[in-house]
Length: 131
Image: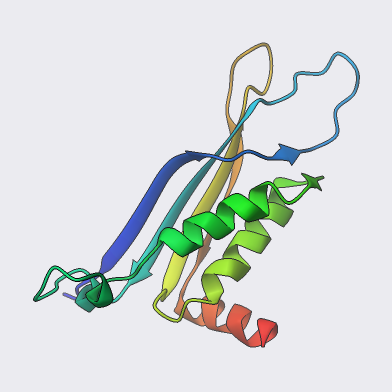
């Protein structure tokens, strides 16, 4: 069996504006991000309690916040694409899964979202396209 390690970010509320809505339509007031980053087990099973031995995710979270607040988005897909591109800039990230959900969908209820999984080769292709 192969060992795997991941960093999980769950239900991060993004301060963003997504979509265009008709008068009287339900406008989502929450956008929630889930992000799972698969990394080397060597970045979790460490010999000393030092930041230099782990993946420092704080700069990535700050970048996600910046991207979310970067202006109006027509689609969730565009914001997800930009977050994936930000993740691709970190060689420590081997693959990832991302989902973005908005709520409410209708009459103060419901969650609607998208989910994407990029395996190692797909993430490598994204990196090559950014180069």
